[in-house]
Structure formats: C-alpha cells, structure tokens
Amino acid sequence: MPVVPLVPPALAQRPFTSAVAGAHGLTSTALAGEQWRHIFRDVWVHASVEDSLATRVAAARLVLGSEGFLCGLTAAWVYGVDVQDRRGQLVWMGRPNGSWRKVRPGCLVREITVDGSDLNVVEGTLMTTPVRTAFDCARWLSFVEAVVVADALAHAGLMTEESFKVYVRTHRRLRGVRQADWVASVVEPLTESPMESRLRMLLISSGFEGPEPQYIVEDRTGRFVGRADLAYPEQRVIVEYDGALHWAQRRADDRRRDAMRALGWVVLVASREDYYDHPQAFLAQVRSAFSAAA
Image (tube, rainbow, N blue to C red; front, side):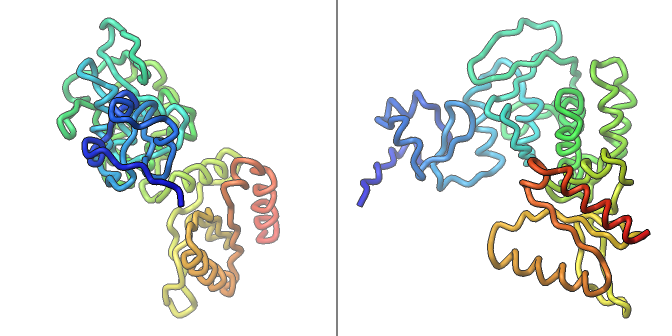
C-alpha cells in the first residue's frame, strides 16, 4: 500500500503557501496528492478543509498582503462565483488609480478608480462590493464570461438587476463601460449555473431570442411536470445543459425530460463538449427544432 504522508498540524486547518509547505517537509510531489487542494498559484489547503468564504479569503490574503484590495475574478470567486477562467490561478489585486503599481508574484494587479462605496470588508479583507465586482468583470472579461459573473451574483442575491444597471449608468467615464452596458442588458438572476449562462448567450448571439429561464412545465391538468433550464414556449422547445455529476441525478433528469417530451416538447440537451467543441452542430439541432415547430 502507498504510504500516505503525515499531515503537519500547522497545515491541517488553513491555507498555506508552497514555501510554508517546504518548511514543514512537504515536497511538490506530496502536494500533488489527493490530500491537498490547489487554490491559487503557490497556495494550497488540506482536502478536508471546507471550501468556505473564510477559507477563500484566507487563501487570497496570503498573496494579497496588505497593499491593496481584492477585485475582479478573485472578488467574484470569494462571493461564490467560479467561472473556471485560467486567470483565476492569480489573485486579482486592485489599487487606487494613480498609485504606485507594484508587481507582486501570484497577483494580477489592476489600477482602478474607486471610492468608499465601492469597497467593503469581508472576513477582515478589503474587496470590491458585489455590484462593483460585476461592473469590473463586465469591463475586463469577455462578454460571455462577464455575463456569467453578473448572472451568478444576481442569482445569489448579492446584487439586483436594477442596482447593476444604475451603477453602469452612473459610471460612464470609466473605460470599458460600453461592454458593461451590454452585460447589464442581458443579466438574468434566474440562471442557476455558469454553463446555463454560457448556453443562453450562445443562443442569443446566434440569432435566437432570449429563452425563458427556469420555465415551469405543466400537464393539461395544471400538474407540475418539471422545470426546464431554458425554454421557448411558443415553439415548445426546451434547451438544457447536462451538468449531472452522479448517476442518480442523471436518471432523475432523464425521467423529467421524458415527461416533458411526452407532452409534445422538443427537449435538446447540451453537454460541455457541445458548447466548447461543437457549438454549431448543437445550434443546428435548435434551428431544426424551430423549423419543425413553424
């Protein structure tokens, strides 16, 4: 049987850097094992430690230091939004515009214009508010990934559609506000996952009108049958993302979708591969379903 390295007590409860791990005798090979979870570049935590807000802030603080505040993708991640962007390996660090910009290992430093209302303290660490985080991501990320962040923050109740739109309208002088306008025009609080946001944007950008998210399907007697990720009621077309991780969940999804199909709905299911590798083939299925409905 393989020998499982002992866990140093000092590393069992909180995030730590690679340097600290080395001081306790843990090699890079040991850190690559199942006992440890990689958070940021050179930041780790024991696999048993809960992925909580406090843990995320503590991990970011190891790289951030006391020189700035969390912003962008890192602030979104602390609030619970994981867009799986490779730049999430770095801690996004904000500094007031015009201040000395210091390159810090493990950080992506951004100079931004902020005032006191744009920042709050979370678990003892200064970071941009949810609405300012959505605004910055709307300016800095691609359009689709910016929508992912805005949808998720709105869905979590950390901001409202209206508060985001007002913020965009009242910060016209900041760079990138044009894209923030577009993001504000399509933010959807009912969206329940990043891949649902991406799938919705794929449909809209391909010429389909915005689908109705979390649409309730009922039978002819008004009995609840299921809730669809995205729906076009007029065409009776449903589009869903297959995010099932377990067999039981997948079987439940299959039964729900079969019940919808039995009522005359066309149910199209997209996988991660459909979205990233074969989007045009999936869109062709949607067009075919629309044509059949017409």
